[in-house]
Length: 421
Image 1 (cartoon, rainbow, N blue to C red):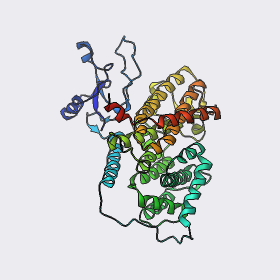
Image 2: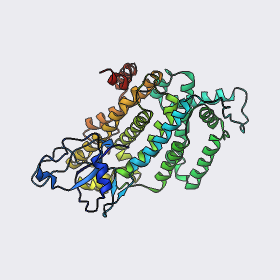
Image 3: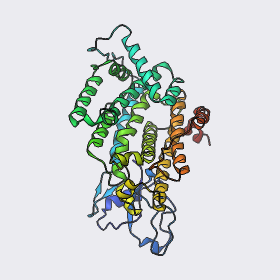
Image 4: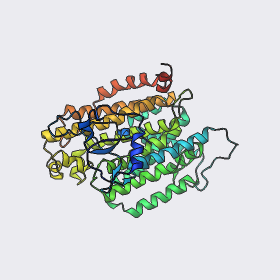
């Protein structure tokens, strides 16, 4: 888990001694937030997770703010009791996935892989299933598809199968039939997932994923969590704070990173921990989804949805009505700058992990990271008008990003470079 440190903000009269000890055990401290004199030590405090990186502190009366305020990933009740944060819940999943991969990499006695049995596949049926997955990936994610063509055949086909399952899951609540989807429909989809993981796929596209799962240490939990994200979209249109939004981003996008790491593979020369690679994959998913949210504010508002932290909107002097009115004001610009800064922090966290992947897998991941991060640049170029202007990265910029991504994919793992200093 990320180190937790105490930083200035709301009063916590009942803060437990155990929590304080945890805070004292931090390994990385943001110097801009530490009390520098006795006067500052009298300030009030909150808990801040350095996993989100430190954005600074609120100023004391009469002071000028040094940076944006910190947002805590650890909820604390009025009585001072710590509540498990979304970050910690997700990190528990990360640890489980990392442990599964590490067990897989140890020498194991020969086992018979699961083979899809209950589907009456025609001759060359699996080959056709993977081919169809590739066609779908090419149709809906052209840049990513191009990147997968640099992977080995087995990895390429596996990534296609995962992509298609995720797309089909997303289409349940965002596709043309979304208005007819009910919670029971998602329950049935989850039952299909359970069958798929036990080698009993429902159709040919399921068979491709079932075959992939039989060959890689892929856990069912991230897949179930993605379905939970779809359930959230059926019942929830507002998010109280970033802690709630973080969990949503994990459900719908962070899970993809956890699904993909076992297939992408970790470079054999990497000195990074398995957990850190999974955490970076998670960070990239979170960054991509935060970027989607910031790009689609106007579009989501027209559907009655606001995927922005309500408490941070209120702090910025904004309300739901401001979002629905869609007028760019100085308050909105200031709010957006802080949201973009947070998204970029997650991209930065993801970067080091990308270098630890197997070299043949890095190019499409780098391409995704660089292209998605450019969306944030385009929002700024549009003067933060994400209400009525559709933000996109032009074809020329996309093409220019591809050789840059390929060049970065050739760099040695960050952990190896760091160890040679």
